[in-house]
Amino acid sequence: MTKKQRAKIVQEELEKLYPEVPIPLDHKDAYTLMVAVALSAQTTDKKVNQVTPSLFAVADTPEKMAKLSVEEIKELIKEIGLSNSKAKNLKKMAEVLVEKFNSVVPQTYEELESLAGVGHKTASVVMSQGFGFPAFPVDTHIHRLMTQWKLTSGKNVVETERDAKNLWDESVWNKLHLQIIFYGREYSPARGNKDKDFIPKLLFPDKA
View 1 (cartoon, one colour):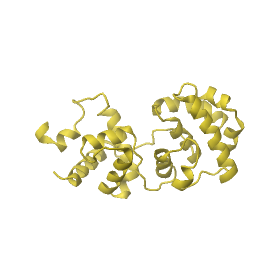
View 2: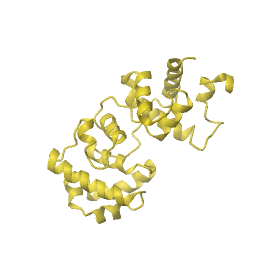
View 3: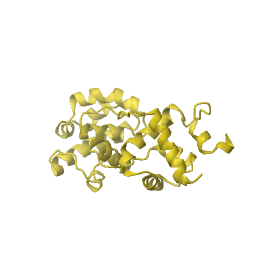
View 4: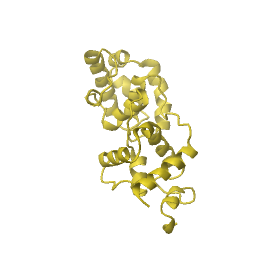
């Protein structure tokens, strides 16, 4: 079976499982989405969704966030891992948005990645889920599963993203990256679940 054939099977199976894919992080606009994604590094989406309501009740715009002290932000997100550095990043991100971008979240990778706490993956999520541009953000689930499915050599997330974009049409990127994440959480967690994890059996029947 070729890589393209395996990719087609993956897409078809995930479409059956997840015909609709909600965005996992609760948000109301591009700014609150970017904040939520920045907070989600090394933290579960579930935990982020528990913390952001109280944060957004106080600071749901760059102007409001910029007015808070780092200590105040840290207190609001203290249940989240790396809260110290994330609080500093959120304040700096908000200040730059206000000063440089007129409080509007920019719509280019270069400008997004110039903001504190925004790496390529966060920028990709904002571009795809916030603005609807075709993007394929690669998180640990996607990197791990695409390596397992032999759709990438898995050397790093940059290579995995490039391979994903080559294998699937850009019209499905925004949905498919979420479908893979949902599959990873439900059927193929990092600790393994051979009973539920059925896609490898379809891709590599001789090893099943």
